[in-house]
Length: 357
Image (cartoon, rainbow, N blue to C red):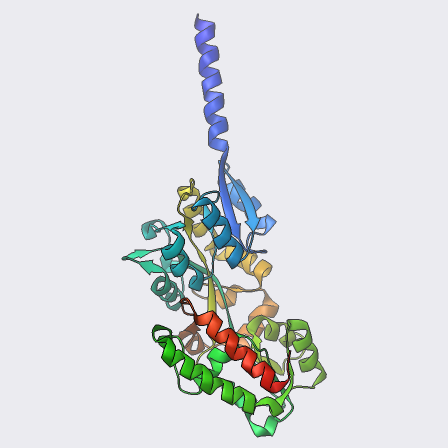
């Protein structure tokens, strides 16, 4: 009898130990946002948690969580402008307990921006993780005075600039013309008037455009060859070229670079909230930020995040952004129904008038 009790106790202890070790943190995130070395370091620090990673993008994250009602994952990383509407329509997230996150580590402007976009009925649904921007790129030896979106249409750069015909150039040009497109989302008739003005501006600008770029490679080739001296761009493309030619820099427009922020959010039926909070706090630690940013190439949304980049990226970011530029960021706003259709029709109008595809 004593032996049986001892055996039963040993079996129970074994089961309990296995159960504790079996807790899984199911992470739904972007490619490069969970590098193997960082996952290994986390699992060494928390041996009772195993990290299971699924790489995805905004559209797929929403689709996966919508299909399950917010089940199947414990921590997701949608961009800040893709949470509010998805939550209201599909109820796929649950509020965060901010007392369990060391938000003092986060850059205040970025934290406030995400909270503003993801607060529903007084509850906050996301906090920032990594961020980047769209703005301008210039060869400062050839276009030293480029400061705003509208400068791409300056006659002195005729045939020497580029842009991508996507919604970013519509928004940037609107800001440059003194409008606030994000505020106009509340009045779609007003927004259509802004889009019409922007379309006229960009159509009149066509003689300045060497070519409309479609991807980072063709844009990079035009900049490096000197075919163009300035362009609308993703910041990451400019940072890459800065490493090859330090005359080529990212230029935050005077009206503010357009900023995206990838976040942390809890799916509604997540089962490992405590493990999720541990992961969030873990990747906010400076030595881990360095590992993460080396993998993503993006800037962590922490105080001094740009100084925690790899040396080559750090030099490019510091050549582009001052703290004042970061304070001047324009965060992509939550997109209400109908807006993307309006923007799409405007882009088609510009393409037809400029002969671009």
